[in-house]
Length: 468
Image (cartoon, rainbow, N blue to C red):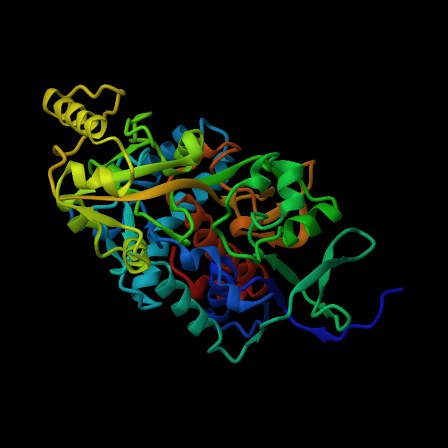
């Protein structure tokens, strides 16, 4: 016999990060009368989308068309599948790509976030310029706007510092509620649908040790609340998981500062040298796989070097502003001064930069780099950089509607997962990550799940609530 319920509602969303907020706003804005309880472990920790660069990839947007860029969901899906070597679920990948333009337009037109096509954001694996970003190149304004909107609805009960504890199921295995609240003061909440938007497990040493051995010792630059709670709850009731060995790295973290460089620095022509003042591998790789490359160098660090032209291009980005404010970016008027600042051999550094510049002139880089900029010229800028774990890529296996699946492929009744709680679209290795895929699975799945719940629980009004 079931214990009595403390509260009953239509939908419980666990996790008030990008995915949870998006799901909540989509449901509440449909004006169907559905009530949502939004649970958050601790808003002071923030979410990964908030501290990220905030770039949203969209294919076929009006902003691309205005810029004369020919793109489509099919091209975007092909880029994602090429980068992850076909290891993501094709149906989920296609669904997200098909939703991407609607997502960008909705953020601009409905949410009021001034996104624009950011053509300077070039990332390995994207065959079209499709990054849309806030003028600050920060994710904080997007999350902030979603949080403000979500908490403005009378149909939404937002409970901060109220972590989820477990899923509650009936005898048939259908999810019928959640256990939530501080330890020793939990409540049983009955509902028709549960959305797990609790993110990945980058902050859980136990889960990292189990699923990504060795990663538990990596520097972690995500938020502290990402402890894999929703994934564990799903596994406890028999849900399938996928890509649990995968993680997204970040190879341009400034050690000891908590800041990062914008990866676009190297895409625009910057280089990375080790403590011997030598380049060690071509820099035109994804910043996820670059993390392991730089960690393999002496003391696990590199020195990223760029010039005034590149500095002016990325000076406005949030990541660079934070690093400048932290005082970790150094400026030097010539090679000798740059070498002194980083305790490098000046003669070797000069030869390294000369060789790189010569490769640009000859269009033949000594390390096989194919994305080349202009020759590096003084004054120079530099910063120590290292590799880190940004977030995990594996999670609960879902279908194209965000429904959590069992090992036999059947949906767990009434259960959805998105963001880092769901298996992503990057496969199971760091080099499978295509830049901005994490935010696509957060915001995109949030929209998909929200719309699916409305169409399921309020089918008579759902067709009038959204445009496809």
